[in-house]
Amino acid sequence: EEEAEREAAERARAIIEELEKQAQDEEDEPEPPRLQQQPEPEGPPVFAPVFVPGEATETATGSELTAEQYQASNRLRDLRQTTYIGVIEEEEPLDNKQEIVDRLPERVRVAIVGRPNVGKSTLVNTLSGEQRSITSDIAGTTRDSVDLDLKRDGQQYVLVDTAGIRKKARISDRVEQYSAMRTLRALSECDVAVVVIDATDGPNTQDTKIAGIAHEQGRGLVIAINKWDLVEKNNRTVKQFTDKVREEMKFAPYAEVVFISAKSGKRCPRIIEAVKQAARSRERRVPTSMLNKVLRRAVTKNSLPVYRGRPLKLYFAAQVGTSPPRFVLFFNFPRAVHFSYLRFLKNALREEFGYEGTDIKLVARKHSKRQLGQ
Image (cartoon, rainbow, N blue to C red):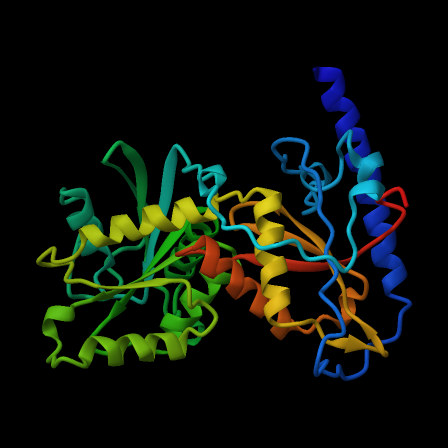
């Protein structure tokens, strides 16, 4: 069994080297011209299946292509006989969702972040049920990150109370610089970031920047609107405020917005529920057959455009990592795939598989016949 694993790893390395060579070859291709949308597809989209040899493994070299996930299989040599081009099978219901794997970390690390004096420490105390963090109306009371262990419904959490992050121009002393660095480190090490926003004066540019850092680093994201009890409300207030948050943070439509009062504890338990959902989504693995079926359905509804008089073709896709979920999609002309079409495919995956609270990454790569033994 160990020998088989070593052989699979060797095949994986060979395929990764081939993919890297393909990427270098693509650099010599001219930039694609403006794409023309195909008015009426002449035939069904091109798609090919892929065999997965068990569970994928992460590479320690930083490469995102765990080739076992999509190619390193003993059945690889038989792929030529089973590849279908331009054929769409009759749609089958996705009734095997029990195969989707969600694996929560043993301890979910949660960074409570935001501007100074938005109620981060109060929220940590409320969630933990202990007066562990010092609270004050004076901004900047918390100077260093503080870890607190929490257990809810059998799940372990580590809440990290952090110092508030001000605009760079307003950071005046070395202590505050150190505090900001510690907060950024807490963000980089967490599984899920809870960005706390003061409902009485937010969201503002700094709130958006903090959420953007979490998003860029691939952390799970929850938006907590604190001090909601201090806001005058009508039946449209929640929607209007949510729309404002979505407008400011267009990069993170997946983040749940929770309206709370950290001081009274109102709706604070919902924060833990949202964190758990985000952490679960980050670790979600989708079977390759199910993934390709969903993408095939999406391509059927919205056909790929034409590139230089030739139709773009999506051959197959595979998940190559988690935290956040990452997928590689193989096209005949990957550089001609517009980001808006990848966004469309991303939305199709969200519609089917959820991914609440986390971003998902899609990468277009060159399809190589040599990799398929053709």
